[in-house]
Image (cartoon, rainbow, N blue to C red):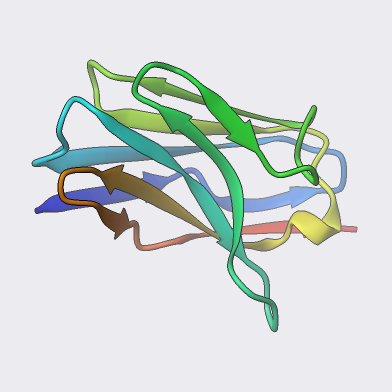
Length: 117
């Protein structure tokens, strides 16, 4: 079992910055993928960014050049630095951890990010 605890959400003005953190505990395995999804009101949940345990990253086109995902494997923690935030980035952000063999995706509790115009 894996537990994911998120922190760092909040309210920020248009153009501002926020940093989300997600700490994993339990049977995380040394080989995994961590990342972030988000869900805005009335919309489907969508991928924001992922990072492998070796540091390979993947971003949604809508956040490229504005958001940066990183991780500290010694702390089993993933971060999402969000810069140049826009009102359309307003959503609940969910941390994920993918384990393999067998595959399973764990979800965090969600953190509200609100960007005011």
